[in-house]
Length: 329
Image (cartoon, rainbow, N blue to C red; front, side):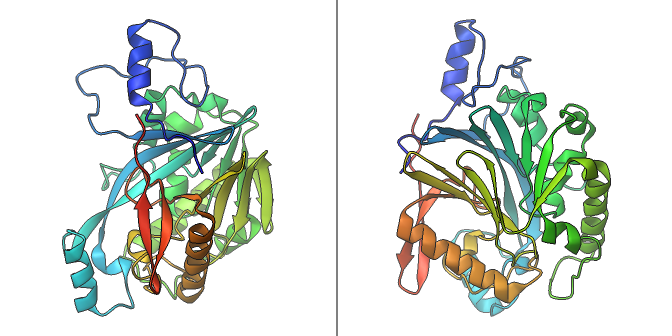
């Protein structure tokens, strides 16, 4: 298991006070000083850890408000309401966390997903990852690879923001399942249950992404090693090409599960999420990932688990239990 889960904040502050060259946990030279003014965020928005010899940074892209009905479209409303009450969540709408991963393996800096982006003014608390990468001292020009778990707007939108796309290197490699690219040529929303405006926005965003980055795409069929110890593999379910990323080094392992797992999925893995294009297959994928995580004791991170979304899975009767990792300062 991971030897340490190091919060970078205190280290960065100490380094700055010593006026030494600032480097992030990722080992990337900082090309501009982190923001240190009155508008600095007080809530932690990045969390660093090591998986063997591989550095991992979880970065919060903010939160996205959604109606609670989308988290369990096949659940009895009373049972869903009881679960929300038991979790101290509001009954009608709640905030989905948005988490992005940055991985350093050898000379490669890999961004896993890119958040919502800034082109959606209706969600002012999302689309935060560009400024939070900058605050962490990560230069976008140093990113060699991007892995897209799937092409929903809260995973590719960040790459469409001018302040991001204008700073990325021209030889950037973007890895995405071939099945996912094919799906978005003519997407099927017949099994989803999304708020009315969402499907059209998803279509437009996916098309913009493909148009902007078609020459950078590196598609794979089922599995691909992006860098030593960093493997992306297609699960399907949430979207036909939905993929997860597994980081393995020194006998330790971390899985970034993308949208295969949601907060309610531990207690009720059988509940369908309204954004799942194949709800039944999504349940099978979710249970399989949770069973494997419980058996191995590996670290698990997912896009929509509450930040920093680092923990492990235990079996709880016929369901599962989320075991949050202890912060190590």
